[in-house]
Image 1 (spheres, rainbow, N blue to C red):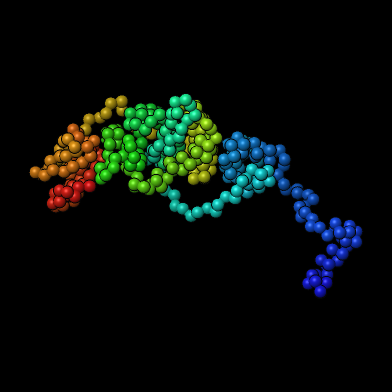
Image 2: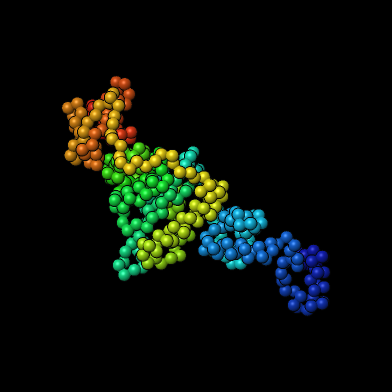
Length: 353
């Protein structure tokens, strides 16, 4: 034993195996226990596998554990469910380690809606048409307010879809969108006719930083889920086909799917409609008497104290108001309705922004 550097117990074990079994006794044996009294019952494993297949293999241990309990099953640890999936070959890769992050969210529903188009994709039809998914998400609850299969990204299309959502859910306090068409414009004046329509409805409009999609991180994350759990599984043949699957996915996302950012609650459990109704006609543009009002002319120019300043061309023909930034300051804040749209400097007319 000393010669081979092994313990006497180990040496005698191998000698005994060889004496009774010959050379086959020297082969490695499975270390699997003969009995596993704490192993999950087979019928429970079948339920877990069935739930996994219902969501096309998209949910992991945490979501499946919550869904199993809600469906009347036992409460299993997420690691137990992960082990079941791995034993049955339903996990193709090891999940990457979680990255540290900081999450921000509004304190209540309808304080902020995020809006964007998911990247368009081709449909398998004779016309070679494309689908442009329009998405609107509530920042606080992650509730999917809009998931619409659009034929284009024009202002009239978006306005019609959003009007329907406003009538159904009421008006939010603010909306966040990127700088692309139809809600944004290039340059220092990002406001368009569409964003001015939202402002006249009483909303505060904000735009994300250019080339920083993380500003709309919740809606971008929704796009990722939409692609992973739905879009990659279908060859869509028409906008109607897209919308049928979109509606089914949206119901599952809002009502059934546990959300990690919500402590595995569902979005519907944290959302409620806004008490602010949608006005069927735009309210008039009125300003307090202590503000100076100017009408924007062609190409976005307006005159103030003998000087010309330029705003967005979308404001032409509309009144704007000016108020002091600070007492004695040469700067003025330009308002359209309630929303600041620019700041001008009377000492430097070319420094408006």
